Length: 353
Length: 183
Image 1 (cartoon, rainbow over the protein chains, first blue to last red):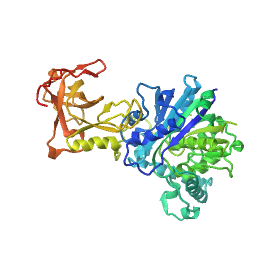
Image 2: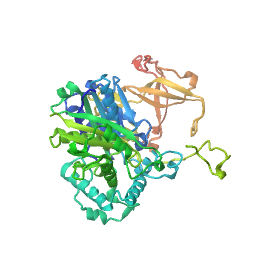
Image 3: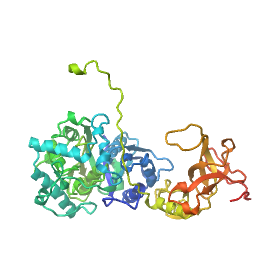
Image 4: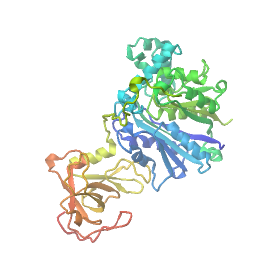
């Protein structure tokens, strides 16, 4: 295996709605910053991969026009996934493993605000049995939360703690986040029920934003920056598409991905988990064996800023910042996709020691 | 596992097709560059934007130069006439189409621009339409202008010697400098 590292990360200041810019205009400053950070241009990049979905833009081939923002002419080697940018990073990592390239550029973005987000996300359900019911993404999460509460694997108190801690940590640590405030778990518990048993604060914000990462292999990574953050293991797994086939109180694909990525919970000093809903974090902690006293989502996580198909890539970028700044030595970054934590990607990141 | 269907479901007609209608509504953000273009249309102007590095002019601009990945920051007003670099004669109706058949859709390189605009070609018989032909926009009345490309109703042939278009579809020579016709 080749050693592959994150050598640059940039993200936007995520907002409820970016109403003055189109996607490419929103993305361009972020991709530019990621390249400028290490003094390279798109011509120095061997492979580019992006993550986004036209369902959010409501515009066919929107990802092709967005590509203009990085300067794809003369033609570059490029790919796109209709997935969170974390999966674009995985594809880029595989490309680096082949030895065909030494550098890769990964970005993702979304304007979650363009349509009725919860309804747009219902289109990822199977189109025959569940899709026609228009079960929206918040309703889907509420189903899983109810099941987990019934099974006794989460409590509303623990969920409220996650909701409160995430926004408080964003206030303290993350200027890019959207929801940054100090409100107690008791205040969350006092909110009326929003959808099912979920309080509003158990749900992520709707966010527009973008993120970009530069990967490099071996010596090229050391040339490009002083403190590369190495990807020591990475894996992604998927649970069945049909909600009825799954135990919504557990996340087997996250457990398997963590195991295959080589996660040893006792050796991890902080975690960035892509948990859009508060119960998601509790289910992921259980599935991956995160210790009770572990540092989780210092950035505030997706509960503080949740640009769709981007919040997962941001977890990887945030972890890389926390390691390159010396705050942590070895971290787990996780991304999820699909209804109720269906698909999960886990990476183990480590600094040069 | 062998699936045993209840009696009531045996020998029923198989479901071979399921229709699941979907409708989603979006607020489209034109963005800075497209807003510039559309506001120009309201004033009977065609505004392109140029890359500050290579000075290529895009119209309408999406906001980025694909050669350099930078914002197209310089606004350039174009005269209007352009050259047909490719076209298609449409002989088949499709759902929602309101056009009388046959009609011509054209790719037009406006004079002063480096990319193409797609629009209808009218006031020309399809068998007269050709690559290299000069065309000009026909606008709605000023009172009816809206922030849409439909404010240009179509392009029509302009009486002017043909330009030379290369195989890649770019104008390599705009033709003799002497202009004929009514521009």
